[in-house]
Amino acid sequence: MIVAAGLSPAWQQILVFEQFKFGEVNRAREAHWCASGKVLNVGVALQYLGANARSLALVGGNPQWLIEQDLARHGVAFTPVSSSCSTRICTTLIDQATGTSTELIENVARVPPADLELFRLTFQAEARQADFVVLTGSLPAGTPDSYFAELMAGLPARVILDARGPSLQAALAQRPLVVKPNREELQQTLGRPLETEVELRAAMRELNHLGAEWVLVTQGKDRLWLSSATELYSAVPPTVVPVNAIASGDCLAAGLAWALDMGIPMPEAVRFGMAAAADNLRQVLSSRLDREYVQQVAATIDLEWFTKDDRN
Image 1 (tube, helix red, strand yellow):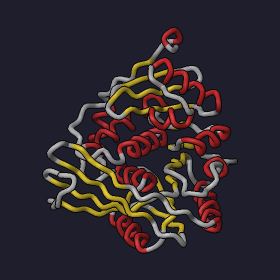
Image 2: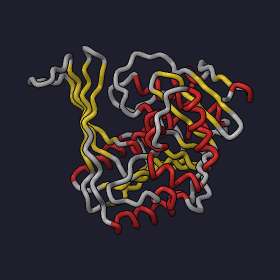
Image 3: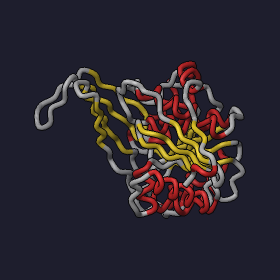
Image 4: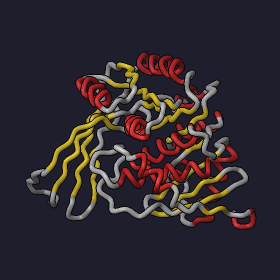
């Protein structure tokens, strides 16, 4: 079983324009509303993939009811942790003329310590039943950087951690199965530019030595890298015509967790994550994956293994 957990869900508005013009009145040709934020994107993707999964998120205010109703429509097993703070609302603008999407993000509100403690207790109860846990999303303002590490302490499940900066650094001591920053987030976490592949590989090995069993670094449409303390792999993402890039990283995490839960070894499981991300790119609404498509595309991805001499 997989548990997806996080503190930064969102209620999402998606507006599609034939051509978006800044500084002018723009009329959308389509409008969609859905549960979103990294944790819920992962949860919806897992449901569409047919995984045995449950999602857990801190929700509150008027969006809570909307989120619960939307997830129920999709059959997502969801445990809401009610907060005294309202869940944020975010907006995606899709410009069909340029094939680009723009994200307008409301930051996660500061939540009181009592809400964080309730989430921790609920997470402990849910995660005891899990084989894999996906911890994902930003921490609300004022939340200790050690919060994810505290959730992971003593956890029997293997953890896929999608975090960055101090919260990622603090969690490494708990030896997550895999951490998956993108290249920019890895630079932010380590506080230095990573301009060459040699510098990137060295940074990944640094996270391996600090406790991450695997480090998975994405670069959008460019080459993906996967490292352990002794192994290094790379792959080029499938080429698709993008419609909406939002949540592609979350779908990668979901596809990876799904494959691992089926017993597929890590390097091969990454193919399923990449295929899930590619499927997500093709859609206006995030995370509505086609399991058959994901399986077919995963089989076509060439994962390159580097020998010991190639790793520097």
